[in-house]
Length: 111
Length: 114
Image (cartoon, rainbow over all chains, first blue to last red; front, side):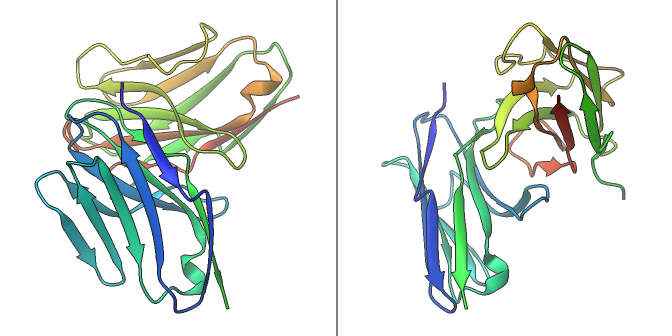
């Protein structure tokens, strides 16, 4: 079955700096890779996703890159703000299967 | 429209009692997922309902856990003979179709087993 690893487990950055979180997956059949943000006490919310037929997707300050050959994908947040502080989860799935989540990264943006 | 809803929002029970957690997915969503999230931890997959197909129960931690989905809509997660280690937030999510669409999460049910 699919296995998703995520690094780092915690990340602290200064406000305005960039943050990068990396995930690796094991199942080459996986074709959908979402990223979720979970604030304290809240439900996970999708912030960006990428499908296996593209290598990069960007939405304002957030971008995701995918390397299918190496089986890894990364979340990039630029110009970080205090409200970006949260736990971020990556996930992978293949068609018709369940989502497999990474263990999460706790991002702290320091003012 | 309305999002995914779950009830109750909080449940406190005594060890050994049975509990039922309910999930109402977004209307028309064919896929429904249950996850467990212990404090400060990640999302542990429990079970996945996909339309009329047999559910994927591979994540259920023991035979004390079961779930059903009636009429392709509402789902109930049942935990029998609860143990203290069952204490966690139970999250439900739904997607519009079987493919890799956006997963919408409910607010969760916080279960505390005393």
